Image (cartoon, rainbow, N blue to C red; front, side, top):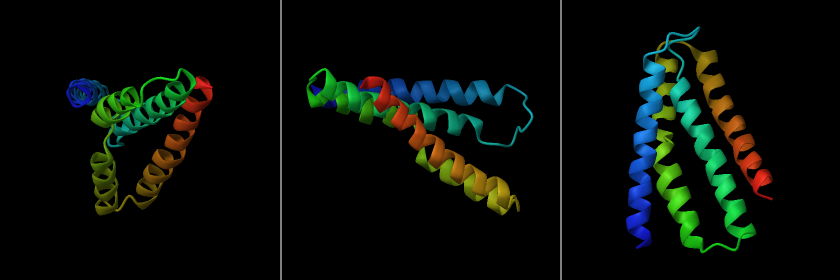
Amino acid sequence: MTALLVGIFGVAGALLRFAVDSWFAHRPGPHPHWPWATLTVNLAGSFIIGLSIGLTGRLDLDPDWHAVIATGLAGGLTTFSSWTTATVRLVSEGRYRAAALNVAVNLLAGLAAAALGLALAG
C-alpha cells in the first residue's frame, strides 16, 4: 500500500512541477533565462521534506507517511537533473557567475527551506 501511495503522490508532485514550469514559461521576467521554476520547486520540496521529517516525529506518525510525502510528493516535485542541466547550460553560455549563483542559491536556500520546515514542525 505504501508503494502505491508513493506512486500516487509522486504523480501529484510531477504534475505540480509541470504546472510551475508552465507558469514560469509564460511569465516574462527580469531574467527570463534564469531557472526560476527549478529553484522554486527545489525550495518547496526541501521545505516539504523538512516539515515531513519534523511532523512525522512530533505527531508519532507511521514512517510510511514520511516516505509518501518525501519520496512521493517532494520527489516528484523536485528536480536535481534540471538544476544540474541548467547550471551546465549557463556555463556553456559563458555565464559563469550566473552558474555559480545558481549552485549557491539552490544549495543555501534549499538548506534554509529544509531547516524552516523542521523548525515549523517543532
